[in-house]
Image (tube, rainbow, N blue to C red; front, top):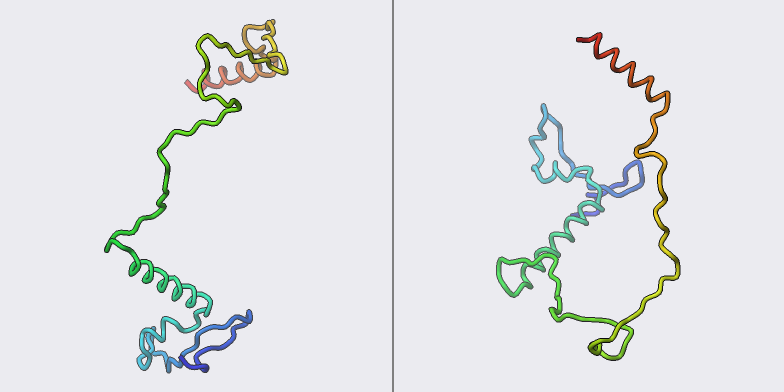
Length: 137
């Protein structure tokens, strides 16, 4: 790449530019397809993909097992861990613990209605729907 292969666009970012020649129909007969593909592409995009390809090639070459890539590997210790406030790990037989709540659990209140009461507006809507359905049939 040469310094003349780059220019600034209207937004001020640097883009690739290539001399493609004259266009005949939808093609540029004098230009290579690579030059046509990269013409007016932002340099940040091309550098991103270039670095991404390099990192993937490095990961593939540095793996111990050829052809296998492990995604999301997690090392887990399979021992069961317990945390407690007490120094001794087990309770003595017959020992009871007493827990006290800071706040009492409220008792359920007795409701006056077995179901939610129906308002007059809801009754009117119900009757209107019934009348419409009877007229439709």
